[in-house]
Image (cartoon, rainbow, N blue to C red; front, side):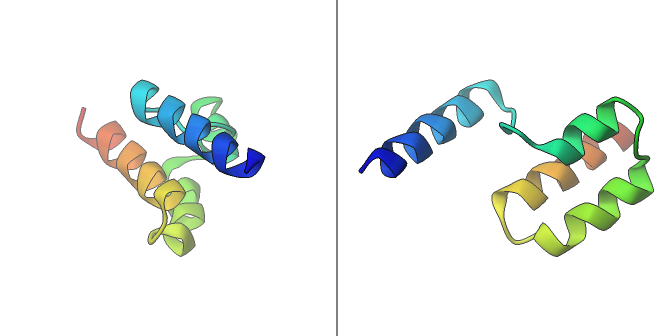
Length: 65
């Protein structure tokens, strides 16, 4: 029950703020620890879940602001 509440709260925050909570790839990208090519490589295996889709969208927005 507690884990369901946590997932709901996390999902609500992520949806409202359009940010992923604890997305280390995003943090590394914004801090220039990794470049666009590396971010794409890391996102590719996750393209079928929310995290991967979010990272790919981040790249898309970066290339076409």
